[in-house]
Length: 410
Image (cartoon, rainbow, N blue to C red; front, side, top):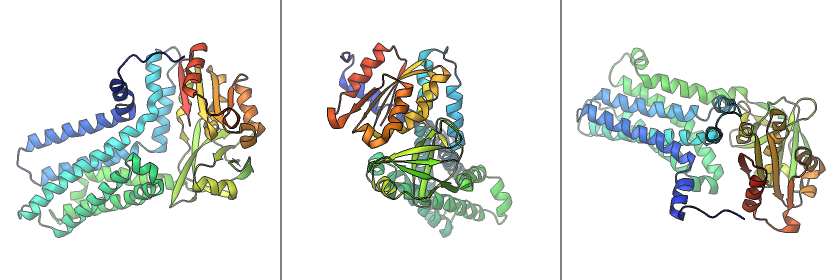
């Protein structure tokens, strides 16, 4: 049985939901920016000149750069590699903290929202200068400023979780196209802002820190697309609910691929299952929406990939001596990508897999691969046995096996 809960429900909700690790990281980034706003306002104390406006623009550009860098494939991979490099002899508490590196998205969203805050302040003070016939009277600057602010606000609003989950394609298009247009408008804004102060645009630009922040942001927006290429695949239809796409392109362990049949529209991430013999690997796709349904019914001979393969959360299982991995449906794909390798690295694992008709849906090869790693794997056919209490099963296994961590992939 599950142990009794030791704290009142509001406290548990505050700690594990309202203030989860993602939101804590978001809060740290956002609060630091609020402090920065306070310091800047105190320092200038009502004397809001063009230098003050330049500081606001610089802070906005810096946060945009941080938001972009936090999502860069090579930076994410580096963070995971640093965290998993800690030895098993490290304190368990430390290893559990490091295992939550996958919440890095809190830094991304915190910096993105902070950039809107800084730019909204910039817009407000710039408007005041313009209306009161202050130091800057350029209609071009004020127009560009409001267009850019509208773009930034739209990106943040459409990224709100409720909207993102209910209209994912709209969110993705706003993020991609809105992000590109925002960078272009920020460049135009910076050039016009400098031109309104001095005819020597070049020297004026290089003296602005925002110039270098925007340069880094622009280069990192282009970088993943420089590796855009076709990934030729061989489709293995497992059932009407699932397909396995095999490819020969070498991939490292513990990574996922973003694939697309229309690179400018939408991208979908799947964990790579390394081939046990030879090079290459595969991805497992189950019916979870229009795109996956289309892929299962009519797989293409190739898909587009860009950037570099990104390390997945399950790689952090190697930080522990023994883990319990709980998954449902096609979540077994990313699990297989890890559980086949971590035993050789000193991590024992137990598997709980709950899915309708596992053998008929995913085939004997997938089921045998699970059993090869954990001969006592708990594979639950929900078509026959109904939906189990996975929390109780996972907790019981965690206690009996004296595991150090539980990973849940759905």
